[in-house]
Length: 200
Image (cartoon, rainbow, N blue to C red; front, side, top):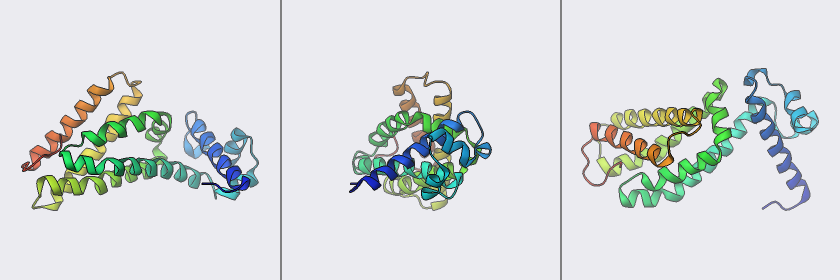
């Protein structure tokens, strides 16, 4: 919890700078956005910007880290149930709800070629959380197959979400969840024999 007005002001300043950057990225490529652009959009002076960030690259990284940190916490909160029921369903829906809530941020990052670090971090998140599930459910003899599966699913889900946002979420959420789960189940089933539970 923030303890004093200085902390609250600092937090508010960082929030405004992040929001201003994201709003600018809807209209301009990231490489075209300067610190001056961000501070003018936030109605803030450059000295205040440099109290928090060294430049726009660090500001973008902070945006990505905030989103990924919240996402990892959410996944962690549902992981025990996911393992227990032998299905990714308990984590899929809350994660999708979270991404819908942060749709504008995700859409901007998905559309930005400069946000490649964000995609790599998402892929890492899928690996770190998915590998224990694959081991628990399928006991793969070759760990390379686990990596292939998780890479396929990570990039597939990123593409699926990007397309869903691009089409203004025209497909109902329940149908998207069902499609994503069928893809995961089909991919895993084609590589591994399900002993107990599995991705469904």
